[in-house]
Image 1 (cartoon, helix red, strand yellow):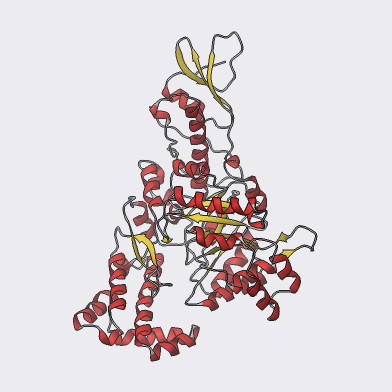
Image 2 (image 1 turned 135 degrees about the vertical axis):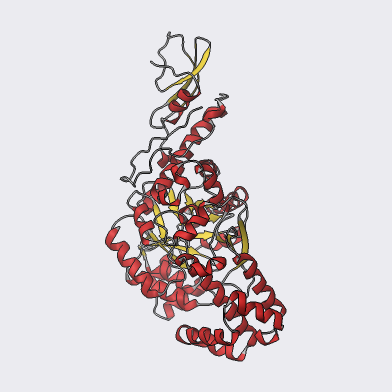
Length: 533
């Protein structure tokens, strides 16, 4: 048996997660070994930790239900930023990922779905289903498409209450009989930021919505009966301080609140007691990933850290800005899809003027009755800095788009100056994210880049390594390292709770320092790379 002494060697033993770890005292010194000392060897075992698998960090039921190898999900990023390439790369390595369908046309979503079926058959993947109060037809079209092409998992986001189309997707995939278990072919992973929103996902679909769907012939009476026996969601992701739509609440308060709601459903014997609870928001380092699992998360969800990766469907310019972000380089700005409601999204403020300009647009909307009510100074600033052309030329373009896609809204706006102003401002907010995704250099000052503090934490963690450059970041490598690092920190915690004091240099799982590598096979172990003491 070889006992390792010294910080670097002890760290190597700790990092060999596939083997047990024994912290021992021998010859008056404390060391570590992966083999149990023989009785009478004079080596005293101070603490022990078994092998730890990344699969064991979360819920085995989550892995079975979604056919995944790891308790990890890459959440959807709108506009195809979580692209087909990103989803396929993670699916092939056993990680679940959701295609960013929000804001895309039905034709674009259909092309993505067909490609995912073709290149990731039988592998874990999902598509986003976003609730859009201003465009309910987009939600309906997405559900039609998902049912037609047998998309078996959706990530439902921004829902404030159950909607007929969400319920239709859920009910249409249910199989079973009155006395048998209900099998859900169509799986729903709900993303929520508040406990109140989580509550309706823990319950079956509302009876009135199911009855209306049966009357309209959109689900069968049998499907409606089954839907009354299962929760609306299979899994609920609790989204803390994150990119995009967020309440910026801490994970350490929100996750226990939603978990407690689920546990009350279980104690009452209701079907919502089977729903798994995952964690998202602020997960950009192994310590954060471990903390989420330690809070009881069945799986973790990343977002911001994937946006600067090679596979992300955004521009090199946006990725470069993200790779330079610090934790404090985020700000809240009005959301394009919920502008009139005053809902904000979290965006990057470094390298762009978008947050301040968007906030100014919302102030103008709140203080004026229409574009005609603006001062000459405000009008001039809008034309020079925001739209780069006369305001009189902007509305015809907006109206033409609305007549083609939302004719009812176009008609209302012609009669309502306040609504017309909101739609013109939303036009800018919507285009700003596309300018960032396409890397339009003449609009760099208007880039809207969704970003949460996890990005800055990740950048600090990988500083000085090849991963500091976005061209070296690959989503599967990052997923494996975050999970492997979480497992490493779970081992440290176990030994610490046993009363062992380890060298400070062992306290952090470091990112790989060698050349980046491409994604391997599902479940392929990754050996941690450690720097010197």
